[in-house]
Amino acid sequence: MISKAKEVRRRPGDRREAPVAAGFSIPQGAMVVLQAGFADNGKEAAGLVAIGVAEAGCHNPGANGAASVPVRSEGAWLMKNHATDPITKADIGSDFFIADNETVARTNGGGSRSRGGSIFDVEDLGVWVKFD
Image (cartoon, rainbow, N blue to C red; front, side, top):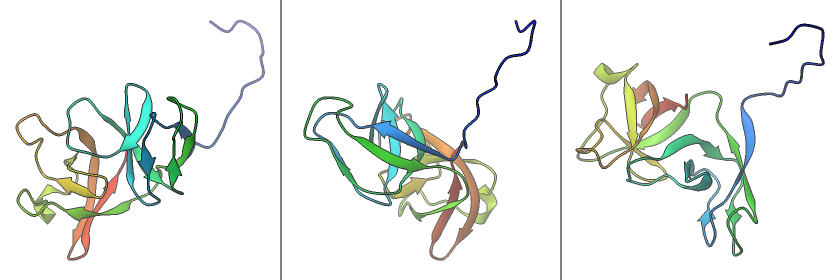
């Protein structure tokens, strides 16, 4: 509990450097998730935490965290719509689920997909999503 004045630190909350898992490559523009605290490509798996989109590519040939990927999360991002579990305009405002590093789905696939954030809009080009 604060009882006297202290310096308050702040940083913008839309960008971060995420440590990449050992042996993984993340391409620019890929959806980035954390798995056990390390960055990886978005993929169909339970227990992942979506953190945004890679602003640049990164290859980590070393140990966990030996390289970091720049990730941006603020705003809405255009992703591909899943072919067999598509998101529609009726789903705007609902959760989306991660199918791969560029594809989002309407459902959790029976528990095999992680929640990625919320659906902002849907158009012919794909699905606009927000990471929250």
